[in-house]
Length: 170
Image (cartoon, rainbow, N blue to C red; front, side, top):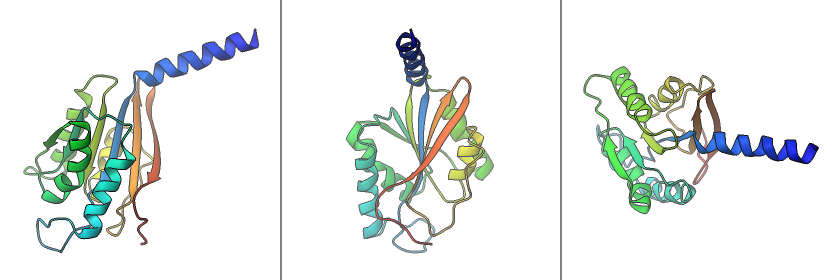
């Protein structure tokens, strides 16, 4: 009887996870310089490849970025690997509007969709919080290796933080 109850519980948990949106949030990789819209440095290009490798089993249907090239260049290897559409969310109306538009785009997707969001140190934590992950910590300017994975489910948002690529030291 205990085995039957355990099997039923595992089945319910698995079914619930199958209907969860999975959202992975990362900051863009290392910049080549301090200009307004820099490309990626050599280390940043390596990190973009490491991101694609880390997400090889994810199968995102959509990759959201800001319009700045460092976010698009960071996301490109993952989007190409999965043949996922890469979509830039405008920054024209400011950070709060960008966060709201990004969250609205995620919420408009099917309940079991997987999404990669590549943002900035000042937008990634705000997007995570707006998606219901209140534990999202602010991100220092020197941090490039944080990966926040969220599961958006009917009973709320569950998240975890991991690292990918070469560790960054702040």
